[in-house]
Image (cartoon, rainbow, N blue to C red; front, side, top):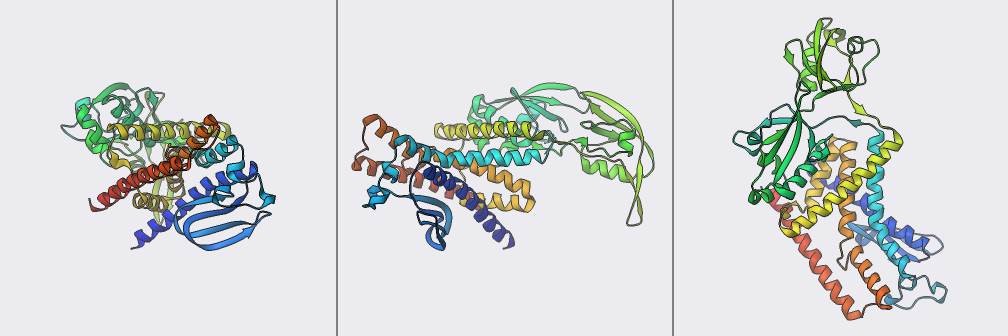
Length: 443
């Protein structure tokens, strides 16, 4: 019950934020281009909170159904307007202004993603390169020669620094030509290339949600011990270790993850140990005398290191934010196209139930995870709203372009037909989304 409540609350918060961002884009650009805004609503249905403000007496409200929102502009097609408002109706403004207003909603979703990425990158990005975990016998991964504990440093031509980019590159390579070229690095810093080959008929099945790693035959492993934040005067710094070194062993004990590092170090208070690490793809060793701390009356060893975080500064963080938003937007478009062609499973279409689950889980894991979910959903909203479906922004932009070319608006009959086609397409999309949500709940 508690989890369901968290999921619901997280969903409402997430959707409300992203809808507010999207609709604010329409609203503010509409005002900038001289249009009169009658209502700005977060949610649909009956308003549960209303405020009237501004020289135009705009109605700002929060409505009872938190599944969207809208901005209502003055429009002569909805009835007569006051003489003092002549020229301020949406359909009376120049076509470029109307297109700018329609584009502003998706644009603000992309802008939100850029700013959210920037916030995360400014806070520091953990330098956790993906690691191969358990490799299943008789799998595509085993046939390719993957080994547990190796780091994934490149997929195709793309350098890999985190699991989100790894998953995108894995799927991209899989659906492109059913093969995944990878560069791996072992504990000694040696690199090698492998190729995971997947038969074409099996590739689409591996694009279903939650199937990729099981289908390929390997699981994500624990992150390697790449150290940073070395403390002045403590054992690691005295031994000559640096930020970015990857610890792979202490004495004769292999170190695969930070949990093992803590366990081994704490068991050796004040002891002289040999630390084995990889720097610049070269395995090295250093002698260190561990520090000693007393916790609850128990002596514990202390090395004086933390996880490396890449603090790249405001300018580089902003450039990285732009690159990440562009890459994820292109990937979303590619996935949509490949769903239409059958190369990617339509089970990837998610509805409000799945979004609520993802948002709830992310909220429980912390602020950074929740922001990442907001980024993904915001980019998806931006891309989907640009589709040329009449009831979406993209479809309305097509209407404006047709009017620009032919010198007048489309006939009422053509617009009604377009709306009917758009509603049918949206209902079809929503049906797939809800079916997938329910199927996931029952599986």
